[in-house]
Image (cartoon, rainbow, N blue to C red):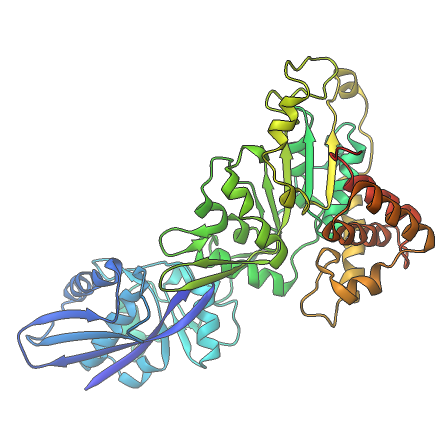
Length: 504
């Protein structure tokens, strides 16, 4: 008799169903696992054998064969331990085969039978719900998986609890969803002295999810302002929170099964590799651009990143997703993020500081900023210079609005965009508007159109740059509470676009 249970294999954030088949047949005693297992899956036989022995369950002197179907799908990870054990226990008639077969199972086992948490419980629960099956996972993964209300989640702490549950000796109650994490922003924009233009650009970037580049000398406040961006962004919607949490679940970054409504803020170091930024490595794990999905990717010392890493950002910025290509699979991860980059104007950092002298003016700045290619620079909607702050400025009282006030304006602008794009499944914010949609929502008045046409001809704006100016102008109009895009909105949008051009 062949007994079956089900588990999943992960391809990005997608969980593909895997049937775990077990056959106990006559022959020399052996325990084999087939179906393209990796090293961690192959070692499951030793963990399962030791766990059963710890519970005084002896394997028969027969041949045990575990098949993971489909056999041509690579199987990776330690979460196959528990489904292999349950299919074997069903074959030994210790567990009822029907109950085991109606369940999706994942979990790693220790040698004494305790269940160890694994990554990917949330996508697994989604797959189980689509198959109309229950989910069985370690106790530590239960609160995370229970967020999928369409399936019942059973979360035991050990293999012994699993056996008592399926045999009816001590049924377990379904797991409850974890708590929604609410993090109160402790960093306020009012802490930033001066830099009103940069703070305005930060507000526009948050309102329309426009990519922002800040250039200024060391210590001028670029990183300080970027760290306050999460405090002015609206919380994640339920759909966005689920999308983001699924990526973090696959990466093993969810804490205690809680789902956060705060937007991710990722800040990789400039020595990070391409696999760390884009995704890849063992198991093709999500990279920083996917972990920042629906949130912020802050890249400090932007020109210091390897050129190849910077160039790989171009396609995800446009497409909103990244495809990690491997010889046997293509893994897709969503990557709709707000890119905030900070850079010094030159290698020494003091090219524009009148109080200091740069020995290689102007070549120092041209060589350094030249590390950012033209096509990548063209993808920044907002470019702002951050001048140095004097000691006298630091003694002045705080100016400008605090994070709460700015956040309310950003939330209002985002609400307008949500209503505007309610019937468009591909567009969520102004930065994503394209084609006819952009023409309908961002056509400026006569004066604004004339100004934009003159600027495009004089400064040689590309077609991409022209459309990005319109998107920024639309966001500025939303912050202004204006239905139409007018001349002042276009002028302000152009002022951010033309920074760092030779003509300007």
